[in-house]
Image (cartoon, rainbow, N blue to C red; front, side):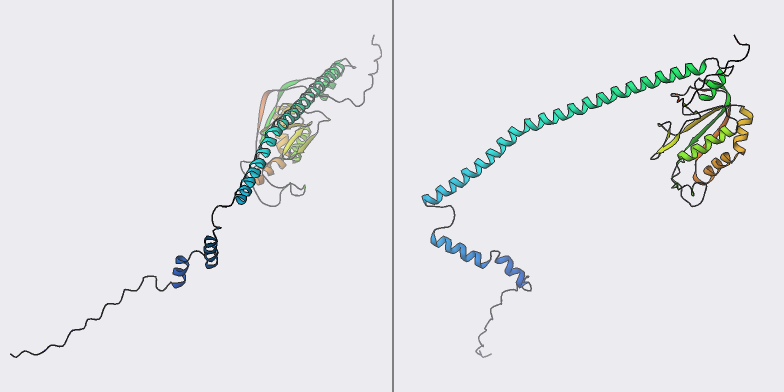
Length: 300
């Protein structure tokens, strides 16, 4: 086989592989040129002029040192003033606390004096009511709450609902009460008046003896009896015929009112007859008018 000349083989050099981020030219430019061109040009110009970095001339160095000294002086003066003012503020604070504590002590002392005088006046009033008055001294003392009472009666325990209840209508809607499942002062007024009308001879709420002049009011959600707050559950004790008193109260309009509160608002109550209940004397008595009892004929 005769040899034939072979054409020369020309190999084309391989092109470099494309960059993976070739399609993100704008992002690539931002990453590669993070410094703005204007800033880069200014930095290069300062380096060429020899003004880049720290000041090199004596005047510039002295100016920088003076600025640093001034800044340090301002910080030092501020710290010194704060250190000087701290004891003054602390002294004024202690003086204010002392004034408040002294005022509290004076107020407590005045409250103790008022309570002592109130107790003294109540004792004198009770002693005056116990004096013989035509054979009615004991009755007057009983009705006025001047003496403690014990005897058969009933115990009525009333408590707020376990949770809030909602709904329209009911006996409290016309009185403007918002239904929160809590006993109100007007509810307690109706309950006490119902016991009086059912034949109770004496009534107390949580140990507070009621008299003919006792006031049941409200302060927020709290019930006040003669300006003393009560905490639920409310224990109402009434002296009277234990059999007739409980039945008469349940059948009365106020007893039915309490039943409606139980059914519609979740108010809880239990009524039980007691062989003996003890009611303390009223803590304070107010005598508005008094006249001397007429001397009976034939009395020496």
